[in-house]
Structures are given as structure tokens and as C-alpha cells.
Length: 228
Image (cartoon, rainbow, N blue to C red; front, top):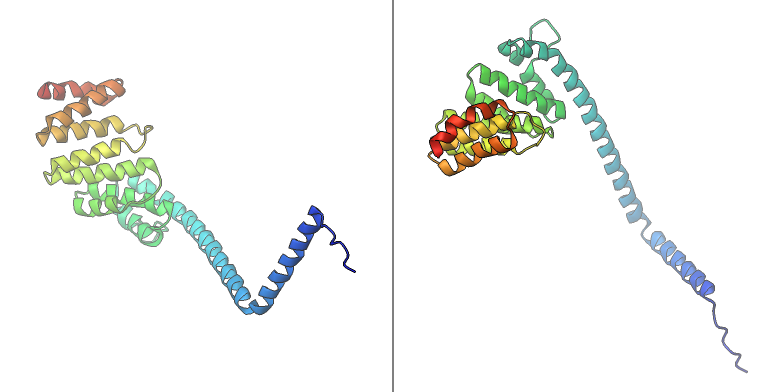
């Protein structure tokens, strides 16, 4: 005699599915244990390598910061050649060596800017340009400096339109940069020299509107008179 099939409750259905999933998972793991363990092992290795890399990079950044602090007294004192090469017989490596050894760290990237500035002050504009262009750090003020450094290089090469564009770009990296008005003034002057009076006027008017208390604003009227 057939008995009436018992209706399962929602809880029992849920438990039944859970049991089914467990045995399916267990069966898959049993059949593919080598592959699963291989993937898990590979993942552990990747995580370990990433952790090692980040820790190593952090340590290198600290070392770069120490070396940069040592050389800054030379840079600030205007001893740019010594700042680049370091001092023999001392623990001051020099900016060039810091960049070579720690260039991939944030402090190493900062060293690139000071190295480029040092070359610039010594009149070695090609060397300066290469390091300005190579900067890829995350500090806004140095990114703007790198762009302005490249702009100065192109201005020296009489490529005034390109110089103006880079100065303009430098002025828009960060609203907090105290040199923004100067960058805009240089952008305007280069646009003016290139014969692009419309863009030059735009730069000069921006200075008068947004940087009324700046030193650049005291100079801008003489240039505005040339485009109006």
C-alpha cells in the first residue's frame, strides 16, 4: 500500500541542499585535491611575494629619506655639484646615486626633482629635462615642478607654444600650490611670444581674477596691455 509522501519543511529543504552541497564539494576536492592544493599553494606564494615586495619597498623608501635628508644641506647651500655627486669620505651619497638606488620609491622620486633642479642651476638643461620628465611620484607640488621644469626647457629651445602648455598644466595640478600664479604668468608670456594672444590674455585675466594678491598680479598689467 502506498503511503502519502511527506511534505518537507523549508528548514528541511534548506538542510538537504546544504548536505548535498557539502558532499558535492567534498567529492570535487577529493577528485581534484592536487589541483586545488596547487592553486592554494600558488596563491600563498603570491601573497608572500607581494608582502615581501611591499615591506622591502617601504624599507627602501625609509633609507632613501635618510639619504635625501643628508644631502639637502648641500643643495640648500647652493653646492649643486656636490649635491649631485655626494661628498667623498662621508656618508652623503649624492642625489644621482640616491635616484639610481632608490628611484622607484617616493623619496627616490623626490630626489629626482632636486637632482633635476641642481642640473638646471648648473646650466645642464638636457640632464635636468630628462629627470623632470622621468618624475612619476605622487606629490602634487613636485609633479607641478617637473612640468614647469620641462616648460622652461622648451622655452629655452624657442618652442614657446609647448612651453606655455606645460606651464598651464603645472598651474592646474593642485589648487594649493603657491606657485600657480607664477606658472600662469609664464604660460601667458610664452603664449604671447608664440603669437597666441587669445590664450595669453586668458592666462593674464585668470591671474587678475584668482590671484589678485600674488606677486604675478603686480606684473601682469604690462603684458595685458600688449594683448588688448
